[in-house]
Amino acid sequence: MKRKELPYFMGYSGMGEGRVDYDAFYGLTPQMVHWGSHCHDFYEFYIHFRGGYQMAYGNQFYDMEPYQLFIFPPFSMHSLVCPQGVTNYERAFLYCSLDGLRRASCGQIDLDYVFRAALADKGNMFYMNKEEAEEARSCLHRIMENQDNKQPEAQFENYSLIVSFLNLVLRAVRRKDASVPGFNAPNAIQQIIGYINEHYREPLRLKDISDHFNISQSALSHDFVRYTNRGVYDYILFRRVTLARQLILSGEPFGEVSEQCGFSDYSNFLRIFHKHMGMSPREYRIANQRSASPADA
Image (tube, rainbow, N blue to C red; front, side):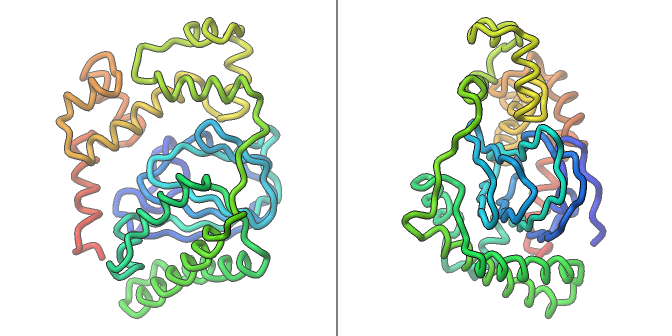
């Protein structure tokens, strides 16, 4: 199955149109311009080895160290924060759909529930030890090399490796002292992101936000881009489209989706959704229904 390039809005992903249930990656990138705040409609299990500066999750920020494990559930906002760019960036990650988790657990364990309960209790950042991180990297590297092989025995081997990888993830999550609270972003930026996350469905202008926090519009714009790699208005649209994707997949009528997400009118909603997703809301719903079909297994 040939993977298609996704619109710029989504960043790197092998799980777009014509998607599979999982996508593994391991690599060292000498120079990279990092993606801005984004989310996926699948899980991301990310292991940092070196090169990163900070990771943002919602309005929480984490200093990055070797062998950190980050878990990002579907539709959760996150981004790599590196104001000066990224050098010698080494990381490994697994993208896995909800169907992929069900297949990996053979339908016996609700891994989505297990992970969400752990994240609600402990946060989303954990530490692996060196041996666990190296074993996890080996699993993901082997999956990455083999994931385009559609022969049944190759896919069976990949799922066995996914099970081994998820077992390492759960081992790190289960440790009582595994989680670390977020910190280190300027307090104003955390408050501003939190404020936008609460009010993005309302008519919200840069001036409204700057007045609310008693900060100049230029300073607000500069600091916001520095920590999210997105402009304020771009971030607001991202949150609206993200919510729209969730509501579309839940079966909400498109007109109600437009209204609930804070778009000024239905035609504006259609235009912005297509710009950022590369397809109409109807096409997005159909594509995701097809991706969840047993025929794609």
